[in-house]
Amino acid sequence: MAVAGKGGVGKTSFAVWLGDYLARQGEDVWMVDADTALSLGPALGLTPDQVPTPLVQQKELIQERVGSGFINMNPKVDDLASRLSTTVRGMHLLVMGTIAGAGSGCGCSANALLKAMLVHLIIHRTQWLIVDLEAGVEHLGRGTISSVDGLIVVSEPSMRSLNTASEISRLAADLGLKKQAMVLNRAAEGYAPPQEIVLPPVLARIPSLESLVEQQQHTASVLDLPERDSLDHICAAVLQHFQ
Image 1 (cartoon, rainbow, N blue to C red):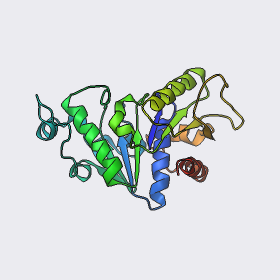
Image 2: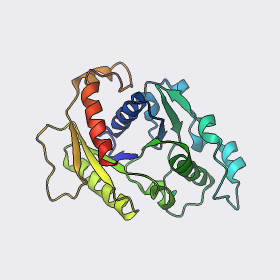
Image 3: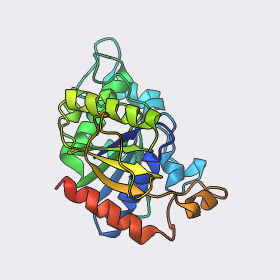
């Protein structure tokens, strides 16, 4: 499952709520941070020293597995997930760093290894994989995105955010990812996006959470909010759409 949206709309928060919900149901959950902001670890409550080193920064490992010059586009990665991840609250966190360009002809060693890792996790490793993306989906690459079950686009009820969400949805569809859903964050219950903007079906609206605003003044974690039961119902409804 990939989660995307314009920066600042709450996509990382929703990815964490989704993973936490699944983990508390006893599911095997892998969280992958593929955003240059690298905010998934802090949102899970980890301090900077507890967050795994981004895979893209591990130059020696990249050289060992992929090489240089003639790049190995099918590197061995089956031993890397456990080795490079950390476990938090029943979820496995793997920090990739940016993987922009992996599907657009980029032949760099780092992108080759990152793409191979995602494919391995999606196809071979886990029951639930949640990838926190940057705005856009091209960087998953055509070979990877064909294996993803679905895309969740998170947006605020603003024209800039909705237009970005529409473009993300279009790009994903062009890459073959047709199964999509939208979550409107910080939106009133009755709010409906303008009909002229082409968007995925809206499955949930999350109101502004004062408790989250308050909590974020003291910690980067978005977990353990008093609204957790309501957020659980939203997560369950969104997941049902993809089953």
